[in-house]
Image (cartoon, rainbow, N blue to C red; front, side, top):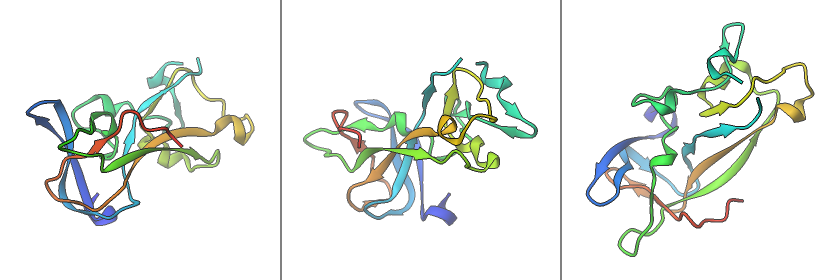
Length: 152
């Protein structure tokens, strides 16, 4: 992740808030995608069945200690406080319907039903939530968001 993004993030136990996320190496400039917030896409399925040929169509490893996508830990980012103001914000992104199948294994969503890839591209669009840095964030800093952020 550091070679591609210039930083790495990791989960860690915090004093007051349980588990959090911090910059374990490198530097994050403002406006950079820092993490992804995993979720469920509600359409009828069995996750382990959602395979097309050799391509896994979703990622459930974000539920484990070692996710395939190292950015899929956005759900552990803690809420801001007076002492620790938000340094990331939430933003929704629509992934294109023609996203290469080989990249689907990095999307930290669990489908509630299998997708029919014969449908038109609009029905295959996947919306994800990413966390974007709002200021420079240095090695060792915890990530904080506002849980009251309006997602744009």
